[in-house]
Length: 150
Length: 150
DNA sequence: GGTGAAAAGTCGCCCAT
DNA sequence: ATGGGCGACTTTTCACC
Image (cartoon, rainbow over all chains, first blue to last red):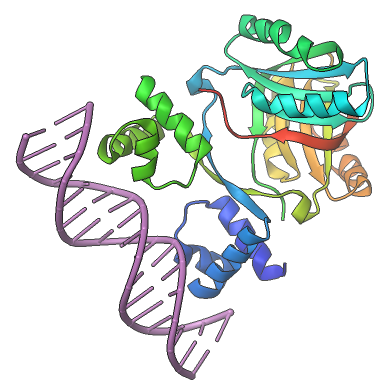
């Protein structure tokens, strides 16, 4: 990864659906080397994929909750089970294991507070090893980006 | 938005760079109506855009922090100023205004704990109206998706 | 790395149904 | 609202500087 690679990454992040020729232009290269580098970045996994971004509001997903989860057991099986099962639920969009007072923080999207409450009772509280879930509601999404600083 | 639209959205989310013909197939339509619906979904803003996803680890961005921000002032100017200035810093990838004990939660990426500490001192603590910042470090990213349930 | 060009595949939009 | 098809454009590959 040299500076040209970084310039390419900055350009694709800012303009994900620009044709290679224009991308190359923005990165200060011509199309072939730019394409070669792009492929290399994909193969190496530095570019991990592409995504379509949907507008949560349009889908009625107006509720964003941070669920702070504490466990009663911390054995490996319990952790592995939990870390696997969160992938099954599309309402859970982010999961981090944490230092400090929570064991995990999950970001959960929902259509309404009632919806979230149902999800909390039916799913979150029954995740492997969970002892308590402390929910913080977002009032508004101020910023939300997939663009990383390179 | 009918059921065909939802099938399309599910298909593009799961396979963002599939050619329209195959997408249409997965959604149970043929290419033209699928294409028209996709365009409509984009125009209506339900599809808000595309993105390239980079692997944070490959970029050295191994530190993920939730910064819980409290304000000393809650007047409109302060809030507006803060909500604008977070867009200037690419290290801040998510910002939510919150109910409960924090006014804002920011997710911040960094290359190291020292890096984060610098950012905390130089930027976060000087954001408009901030009285305190409580940082929780993620030990590991378990799940992180842009795919929404439709 | 850059140039140019040509092959393969998609897309965007027309049509007829 | 669906399916077919065609020209325009991109992506991808190549040979060569």
